[in-house]
Length: 441
Ligand code: XLS
Ligand code: NI
Ligand code: NI
Image 1 (cartoon, rainbow, N blue to C red):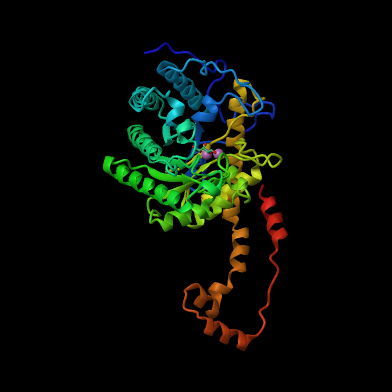
Image 2: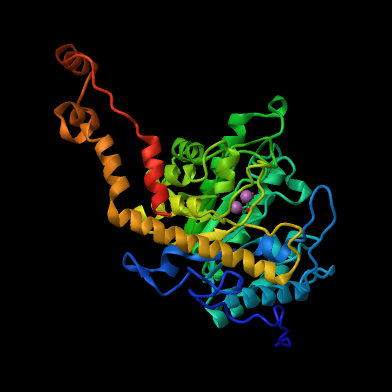
């Protein structure tokens, strides 16, 4: 076995210290994993996960400047041994932070070779090491995914490429990806359609590309069943970036796609709030929409920057937003086998190793507060009660029940209005709802 190097010297296991002063940042003030809230420990409600790509491959590079983050595990050489060392650093971080899960793209954890066969061999060698580390630490793979967007071959898309050869390469890559996910006991498998969209409609056959994408997913389902991979398949919506239009625009669009192609039983959604805001919705909109349709599988727990407006992948630090998300998670009884995956990166000016901890601790504490606030809201039932009153006419009147159960007709509605006249329309009370919500924060 390779010699044990410590990548985060001087930092021990992060502890729950509710009485720590605000200046003590390497501890949790709110996240107490074993504390039971509404019948389940916090760790089970929250199921935190660290991403490998931003956190262990991120360099601080942006379109205007060179890398700023100098990390011992990001040495310029890119061999299988480097990749294994990088995993060692990651597992040291996971265990010191106390998260149960991690996620990766195939190309984050192992280098590409000169051919698919060589690339697969590299991946297999690194996956063996990942398995050992998982077994040694108990950290599990929340989900795996394939990077079908970085390599230039995917510049026109992968499953929606106009080139059959490229589609085939993506299929071959995902075949291996599913095998790796099975081997590592991944609880889920994610498809984020990196370049599955278009830059210009003038050169694009929308319908043909979407038909191909559906066929791709059918092949995935068939192979998943063939090899006995039992993880949940997830699609991650995003409206744009890098393409100007991405087919998996938002939750409702993906739900429509899945139902159009008869795939709705096989896939759920992985919702990323920064993508939701990029689509012009509020932070929790897609969480609410996916949950309402029984499709909320997992969350890429991040946030954007309202000043910038693109996918900045910041750590979620707003108690208001995390409370809003946790209300839906509580209402549906949890996220398992999904979790809260920090698809987040420290800003390029946050260059120290302790910033990596502060970022995750801050977000975990914010979600812990969100969970506590949402649990209190649910227990008191005040907001839920007000909402129930707002819709009571569909339960408490014969007219409402006939609409809800689908027995009403246009004729019966007309007869009702002719008999009873103009309806009484009460206030929506939005500000009252906001005021009450804030009282729980
Ligand atoms: C990019 C996506 C990506 C997926 C995994 O915007 O969030 O990181 O989560 O491919
Ligand atoms: Ni994501
Ligand atoms: Ni994203």
